[in-house]
Image 1 (tube, rainbow, N blue to C red):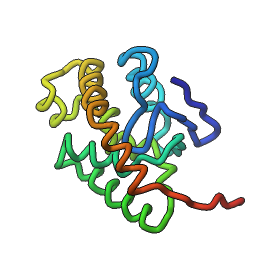
Image 2 (tube, rainbow, N blue to C red; image 1 turned 90 degrees about the horizontal axis):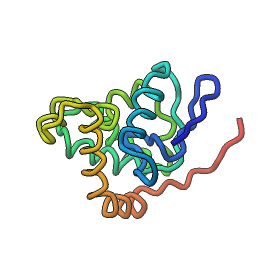
Image 3 (cartoon, rainbow, N blue to C red; image 1 turned 135 degrees about the vertical axis):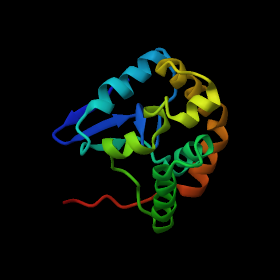
Image 4 (tube, helix red, strand yellow; image 1 turned 45 degrees about the horizontal axis):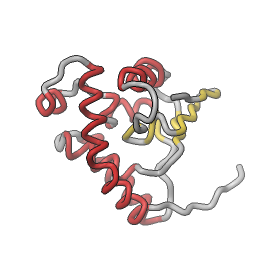
Length: 156
């Protein structure tokens, strides 16, 4: 569960996505939570987040399923759908944005506590990750089918 910070950017691979996080293939929920909240979540708010995959629309849909009143997640969903319609990526995000809309960086949000009944951040995170795992195959398929971005890489 690694990430690489260079200047004001962090490359998170499969650990942190825009609006979501990676699956637990190795390690524990506590390990992934520590990587997300205690390492990445403590980077400066303006740090740009470059993840390894474009699943933003599906992650925003999941965030809104958990907490329909989360305005930052609603804005993310709208932005992801608009970007997809133009063939543009949603990457990069920022740490500030992720702290606002990413449910995996907000495991103790009131809506999450109400849904899962967990007040311990690691157990709440594990409940969130398990809920996402139950929806992941269906959402991943829809994300790939419906919002695959094929944007050209432009040199600066």
